[in-house]
Length: 396
Ligand SMILES: [Zn+2]
Ligand SMILES: [Zn+2]
Image 1 (cartoon, helix red, strand yellow):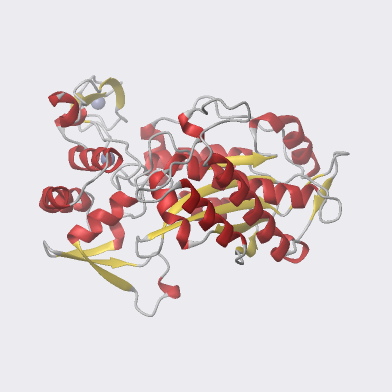
Image 2: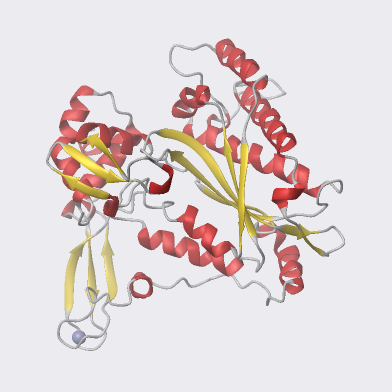
């Protein structure tokens, strides 16, 4: 459906959801942004024509990561930065999943849990690949955290886009088909061991010297559970089989990055997937219809709102990260690898293209930001976000 449909659904049903559920600040902040995106509550900006000085005053978009109206531009910018760094070789996609039983711990500690999840997966993969017995080289990795399933339910998992090869300690590029090379039961058990170990340590609020750890390093037990019960759960999960999957290699990273990157800044759903809304129910197209018996599924509007809000990231959570050769501390090794693959040294994008430039790249026929008088492209000359204040801060 047309842009703004999610905002309409929130206008129709959010108050009823709020009245019947105890929503946390994270959800309220996401809902407030979705409700006020492109309204005066978000402040305004002025676009001006560089030729004839025609100008127009427009309301700001909210830029919240759960807002489906926002984010396409940020995603494009993120892709642009990653592709500039990309090594011109095949890339595999790995998916790391954990037990459903860990979900309460994740819900209650989104930032800390996600940090440890990323670290455990990367440390397990790195340990295996740098080992001479397997590859003996450092790969480049772009990793993305997603918390949703195909029907927008909770399903925290990690996508790792990994170079099919790496740079050896002597500076040689080693090609490898990781699907054949990696012993997956070994990788899965390394990942399980590290993640459980990191979670266990984070449940201890004190460091090795008996001092209190900073808040952002401590896992809190979910309501109604003790720290001991969390340890018991981890013991149990340590005896179960965990799963890491790998998919056929992409020729270059671009395709894989687009696949995982498209939702990074736009939340779990694009408005185009909402096929109909009758004021009560929505019919939504699956992102991957080939995996399902039917091409669509139906949700009540209130359930849709709850599911969407359940994926709003906690402030400060980085849902996309880079490791190995793609990390900023490995610039020299990245350039060595690029030289082996016939690429010029990496040049970071210092001045990213502006919003208007990106819009035209994404939609060459877009005319929404052209001057109605002389057809030159308008430029944003002033931004005011001062009006941006959620209601509960005003009341305080
Ligand atoms: Zn928005
Ligand atoms: Zn003009």
